[in-house]
Length: 477
Ligand SMILES: NC(=O)c1ccc[n+]([C@@H]2O[C@H](COP(=O)([O-])OP(=O)(O)OC[C@H]3O[C@@H](n4cnc5c(N)ncnc54)[C@H](O)[C@@H]3O)[C@@H](O)[C@H]2O)c1
Image (cartoon, helix red, strand yellow):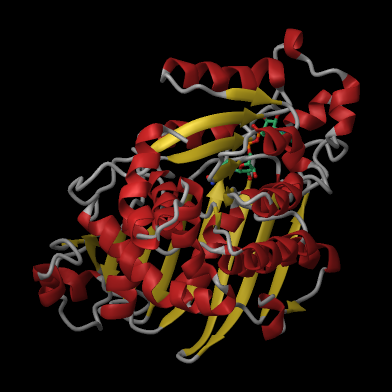
């Protein structure tokens, strides 16, 4: 612990209590409060979104005092680990201490070198157990290893006293996900699952303001969403950095090819429906404030070689929800052979349609007012939606050109929330604020678990080739 931290804590805590607290005690004291089991979860649900929305909409508060530093370890520094690290380098108050990655000669080395350039004194590890044994002053770990490692890594890090940010999919098995929820509750440490849209200012605005407060969609009746990606070759690697076979085997990989393309393999990942779909199906549950009753799905490895693509390259799923407002059918597709129209979620109500995407490239946020809806002037004045652009024929000519099968085109409004930060930064900030006790988690273990239950069932439904049902108690641990 740095001398200035010691001084801070002696001044603030030591004087009053007559005993010294180290920084980890202090951070832990703050962070255990919002995670005490279901009570903490209910609190998260009620006030977490509000706080997050305030944080997100108001932007960072004026810097009052330099925050006490959080000692961070990175576990898994592949493609996503690198994305998270570059976002974290923009977050003040973090002190990077250790990098663990089994690809010591490549990904680990790159991350250590990057951090050294930023003057962090970091140690590199191949084995996370060794890291946990040697790095005694860690407050938090950010895990971006392949899905099948998430459960063990998270549980062991929580038990070692660390707060954990773990990438989605929470786990490739429900058993693994359940163990993570239990470990978070038992240890009282924070566990944030990396569904980063939960902290995205535009998504928070759409849910809190547009759907919940203003009710601009009316009664939501259907949802559709997709993640379409163009054909891509399998991932390769620089041959001189091939990992020795015994090391690959020790960590659960049969070959270098499998190590690089783990997502496609049963037992390691969940295929594109889990990899990509989990982000967006998570939004279905969030915005509908509900979990589905059933799902039908069709999918297969239709394009790629099934020997190396065990999970389906194409999946189309339809969930049915029963909400207090009525039944909702929600379609989702992921395919990996044509990137047309990219990725988005589209919520359709009897008064309006919300088209939203995390991507800034397209569909970053549009809302369409159906002709039958009351005027939105007051919501425009409040800044909830932009002034409209009228689509299609102008009203005076509309009747003349429309035939009986058609509806008058809706007005198109934009969602006036611009966002220029790295996509993952607000979610990471939410995690670090929660450690400091100034926020509640936007995606705690229980929320990640609900999403895992919802998403993993699609692969089962493909296999079963029939509608599978969810019982309400399936979603809780
Ligand atoms: N939130 C998002 O938008 C998003 C985007 C991409 C990936 N992800 C998630 O991030 C995670 C990582 O995905 P990726 O694309 O970076 O994969 P990747 O294969 O590029 O990286 C995984 C890294 O983990 C390391 N690793 C593997 N097993 C390990 C072990 N036992 N101990 C330590 N290190 C180990 C590998 O060497 C590699 O560097 C996945 O869970 C994925 O679903 C999330």
